[in-house]
Image (cartoon, rainbow, N blue to C red; front, side, top):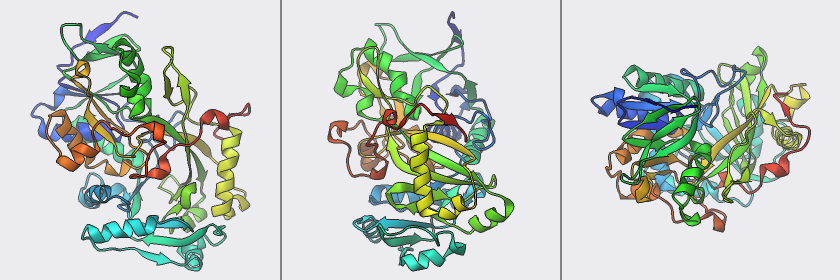
Length: 456
């Protein structure tokens, strides 16, 4: 299809309307005297369909029925950043209607030191420590007994924080994105097929070419493309002959987790409305039902989907088939986890209403990548990726920091260093960091079989 340039008068093109892209568009709209010079491009329609009620739910980790909001981190840096975000969730009218402070209970393996590392940070940050230990017997009796039948032989203790909670994810993202558009930000729908380079006389990215032939040009391009970033950049890296160690795949990898959703009836929802967020050790989490009445179980054992590109580079990418297609092996593994933590669900004859593979990009240290690309030939290309399955809670605030990076302003030494192009490499298997449980240790192909099915 012939390329057709679209004159947007665009200073900043944001590719991706997940939490990084949406938050950045919103914060830019607050500071830019001409918000119409900001364009956000996403493959989904605007406004996006509900994550729970659509036959074709939006792609990407940001579009979900709910997400955890907590400040319980083993790193002081993210504990402070999370408290800032929670203040916004608690007070800003744009977000507070979607935020539910239910508390969270973390069932901790017997050999884990995570709870003590978190408490150490509360002390060192000079913040009140709202947490306490609960005995496993207490846990069984609490919240209407939702964990009364849980298998707990591998857990040594339970860590309770009443100040954590969750948010209605798709609704919050839609509200922020709608406000950015109301303020003048342009929204375009389309699928990118190519990043367009300037000619040899000018360095940088000229814009993007879409599948329908449109070309969107901009002074600066921000990739907030999460798990799809390596696929998007690999041809450009080939063209520029970027060394293997300097390619984006050394900074982030696409990783997925399996998620099961149960539809609750009215009586069941009344019971599960009492529950907090439940962290099932290293097995994943269970989140309380939002108004749509879905109880969500996440299997925390993540995986990559490594492919070989035409240029013989290995990258991890989300598979080309629908995200609601899950192998029988992965379903069985997830059901086994559910039966051990909340067996009454299966005993009641409940069946999974729908399945989902949720994809995000992870970094070796689990610190996000928010920076300008270091190659001078990509001097106007910026990245806000590497959510590592823990960044959604920063929706209200992360965009102001990305906006500073786009304006070449410092966010302070600590943030600049933590979010810069990373020296850590995947050859070491990743590092203990902000959210080490998110690091993938297996391949999706090893979990697939011939009996793949959808939503049942």
